[in-house]
Length: 288
Image (cartoon, rainbow, N blue to C red; front, side):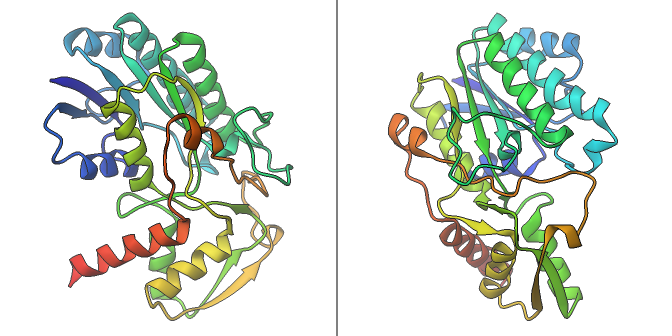
């Protein structure tokens, strides 16, 4: 039986991987969080890998507080760069395939067409920069790696935009949401299925891939769909980014081209609103 390490084991992507692998008997998924393994400490990572033979390491651990990262660059760099490098180096030493999760925030958003894997990177803030440097550390450490750039992740688990909107929608009569930042909402459960398929099929077309759900939306569009599908009665107002200043600047346009993952790994990608609708329906059924 092959051992699969999943770091960031309490986060939303790891939780979705856990949801999708409950009936997989050919693999032993090991979920760990910072209290069990601090990936920023190289010696601890090395000891863990020596004690646990691993076929794959899926790095879901990340510093994702985009605004807080601007004033907490040291910790963001430790987790997103040093942590990724420590894991990648250990994977190389122990012949383990490394799967690193990255972000659309590696782009500056100045492009007007979908970003490919070959598009130039130019992060606008600390979060995007540290995730990009985590990618570079991964790619320089070993050939046997996959980097999946994704965007606007949400799910039933953890803290995310969907949960924030549902909470605010239940507390307020009126809500303003940014309408001039364009990207693609992505259900973390869909990304989890992609990662699991790569593991199950023992894919070896290593490299960087873009994965988000299909389609394009603003944060306003995403919020509107959340409220419509959940029957939440709140007046939603579109606002410009300048009316809602944040410490970190966001890319205005971060839609990603998924041609490579569809062609090379033969992945079918659901439309973002279909995945959102299915998730909300599941949650409502489980609450009844």
